[in-house]
Image (cartoon, rainbow, N blue to C red; front, side, top):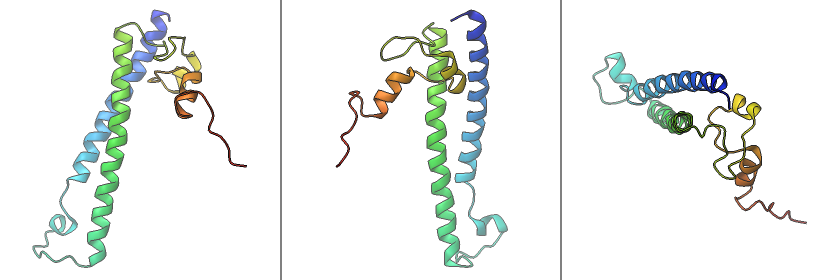
Length: 133
């Protein structure tokens, strides 16, 4: 891959990394924020309604789940930036073939070519699961 193309992908990945770091930080703050009653200044330990407890717990769990997903994506972005530094960016981690430019434009942190990614999604051995009759 040409140096100019690598520069464009590096800039895109660095922007993505900055955004994801901000998102994870914001989500962490939201997940760890005070309960509704603490935020409103209510000193009573009893919530206004039992449903509030469930809503707060659901929101926290959902936010933590989103954080895990964002952190996984952030890790893949970091790995892609490392591949740029080691000059292996755009090379499939499985077959060592070239990852198409279109794929990298869509998913700049892709580490597998389309063929290997499809094989991995199908179970890793490249054999399609048998369909029931």
